[in-house]
Length: 344
Image (cartoon, rainbow, N blue to C red; front, top):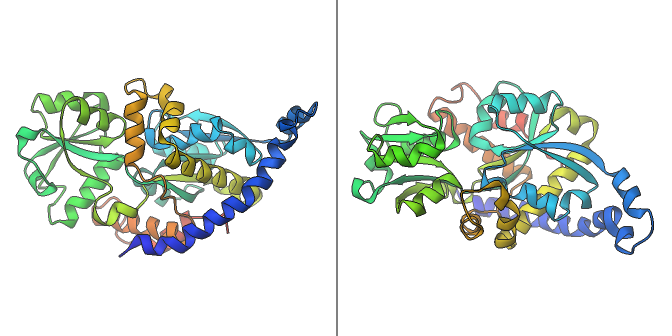
């Protein structure tokens, strides 16, 4: 299936809509202050809608979040966003959003879909980008493709990590049983490289920036990533908004979604500047390294509408194939339930 062709009309329409609305929103939030009118900035601040957005500040794939704050995309769309760095479990995060402790969150589709199956009142409104998960091996291991993992041990940061789920799915698709043909071993993410060096595992899988810096620093071979084949045009990072916010204040959910889409496009067009903005959150990598990571991601691919809903359904199919989602779950109905087209 060619996802690029499917996405073109929706993405083109979205870009036109974003351009047409950007000036009006910007003028409303910023215009008067730009001319130095007394009191305009203060009154504009008072008019901003307060919102809490949860994110993982250590993951480079969330770079559009601080970009949206630093470059004024939130303010442009009438929002005063408080960023909450959430380090708990995904279930705790989605519960926090569903119960109003937070209003929205940015995270990985392959980590969120299983908890969403349980019925949290959180709706996915847009894809953010693709890329950022990698599977690495030493050059001496002889592992050059996923088939080479048969009978081997792979280190992951946790057994429900997006990388573990993703590579389990891709192994299944090439006829390798991820449960019986491959062994998985859990380590704290910073220790994955050491586990590989000690021979405790023969490959490691995780997300950027951790996995990217290990690849470069230890001269490892990238066996696979989540931009191969059919996944070249599939998002991995998504925006979820509290369902009650969408029902009661759709305009705010729309403004947040639009602001993050614009910030994501800006990130794609300005990777070095985006890397500099994100850099304080990644002390283990420098701006040049973060820039290269962002260039390897697909921040231009941030689907909404039917195109995004289709990608959610495809991921649901994938997770059913490896027993993460219940086999009786109807993927299309699931996608329709957890998705909200706030930009329509």
